[in-house]
Image (cartoon, rainbow, N blue to C red):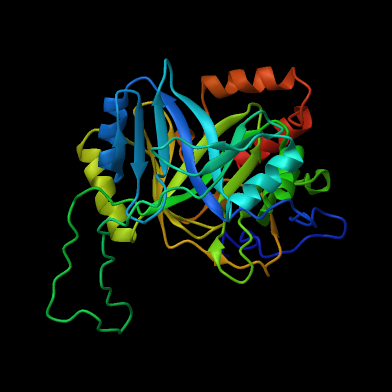
Length: 369
């Protein structure tokens, strides 16, 4: 039997005339994803899950919760108390305040100071799908916290560990940092070009619906352009769909054992795994997906691919079997197959956007491929 993943690793390049995956003259080149912002009605419940997931609390007031990893820098997640759970948008870190000013001048926005609890400056743009996007710089730097140490592995015939036992503790997998966010948009191509032009992001991989490559891609895994310095395979992923929404966010942990033992801890405390454990194809991360108490999908990951600016985008068909090299089959919960999604499809088809009947057929074909 042949390899079922053959041809799915997105190692094929673009055809003539296809999207180049980068803007020729971007306004700035964002350095990283800084944090994500949410509103939630119950900050106590949010903090309890965050601790079990492996965050540390950087700030807690009656109306605000800041969550951080062990790495130095800004918090990973900012949560404000609100009447309902809602994703407010991402914040990208610029190299410095001059880039924030340059972007504001081009976009016609205002540079404002960030709250004293964070420090620095920001400007807020709105992408073509209507999502507010902050670009920030010069924040106060949180000092690094004690990190979870990766286990010493005797790989193959290597003998790195002698006269010592392997006993990973069943405890929260300590989050090191925010890795990426995935966003669904009804205006995929316009939104993609907006991020490439304004933030200087570059595409690592494109996906297209089976049999629809001539209509262009429907998903892209996008990284920061740091020149020769390697960066995550994707910091942002955009996918076409019937509604504009948050899909998931991902947080790096030390290694597979931290991820797996941390998953056992989450299960012991009554939290729900969505999908995992497995290893992705695009990005290669070891992954484990969980639902927080408000229904948001969050991921532990480790051992992801790192690319510099020299790699051109790969192209591959979007398929369920292309989601993982190994691990359990993707669940309906992870894929978003349920009544709410069917309603979103019906509503999306009635509106003027890129998600039409032809794209719906492509999505359904991908779901069973």
